[in-house]
Length: 337
Picture 1 (cartoon, rainbow, N blue to C red):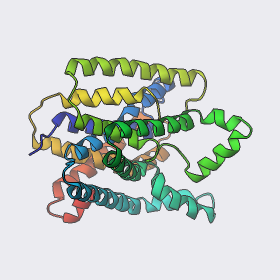
Picture 2: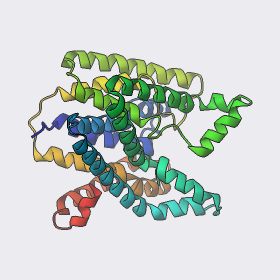
Picture 3: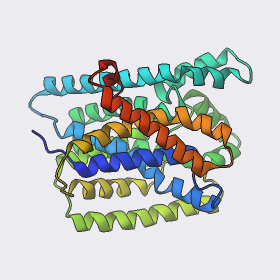
Picture 4: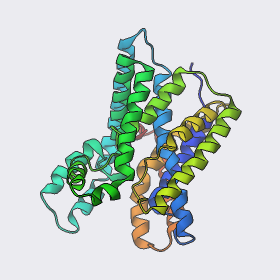
């Protein structure tokens, strides 16, 4: 039996709490500056962490001598992710219909929705699921055909392209000529934060961690702290030059920060208990369900973001607890996990 990592499951749960922060802006009334930096530094670690750990747990079982088994495992993982994605797409349909129709429906919205379903998420926070599926496929076949080094170089190149698109959007939009081609890109793909440019880099980091020896815990901790300081400086620089936006999420220093963070967590030995499996399931449920509650509470209390955060989290946790507790009694609930 493969080793289970309690530290990773705990960090997954914390990451889910950080994702809720991204969508509820909990410190906005306390300090807009603190809220901005907290979301664009600490909270921006969450989704790359999910990608990286997903990549690690998939590729640690990769058997170079049994490609049929690898293909079967990939298909099984993709089917599970697509099932979860489809269920939550249906759950969010009333929200989706309202968003597309409350200011008047246009036929082009149908094409927008089809594009978003495959690339950007059927609802805005669900983008992670199709991105994870696509990134899994890209990294799997890169590694299968070309090996680890080529995979890392290629995914980094894709990330840099996405980074230039994601971070420097205000600049590209202001340059005549370039703005036309950039507008074509945004109409076609909408964003570079997807399974083509964003996800593969972090899946590849998970692959790297699964195929190489761990760094010493102290080295990983120091590496993470240095990377995070540089990450903070990077965010500060973008804010200073006025190009930091709500959707800015691709940073160069995020790559080493995630590598060292996950490496450090993998070195922590905590006796595994059932509660950590529950935390793992809860993290997925909180991630997928929290917008159901956040949208309502933000509409009711637009100037009480911290209250909205805790109410959203409480409702999402109650739903997660319900699913975890009754999944054996009602097998359909297992489809959510």
